[in-house]
Amino acid sequence: MAVSAFGSGHFVLRDDVPFNGVKVFSATMFQRRAELGETITAWIADNPAKHVTEFVVTQSSDAQFHCVAVSVFYAEH
Image (cartoon, rainbow, N blue to C red):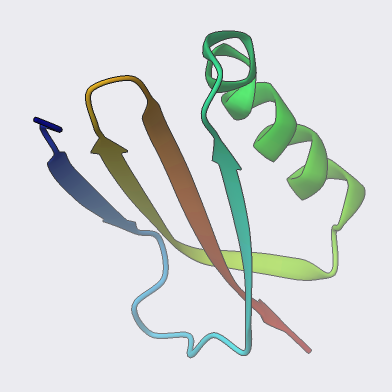
């Protein structure tokens, strides 16, 4: 029997700025999950015209795999 679990969290940086774009980062394998923060930080640094407004972190699992997804909402002018 597969067991599934879901969790999510929201972190709003700028609730006064509407977003007009979203970038989703996800990882299933352990090493990729461990590097996810650095991957997102590098993307933010490489895209200075995108002003991050919110992060949504979602985690899901079954009997074998754990997946973490980070949705980065941004405003680009």
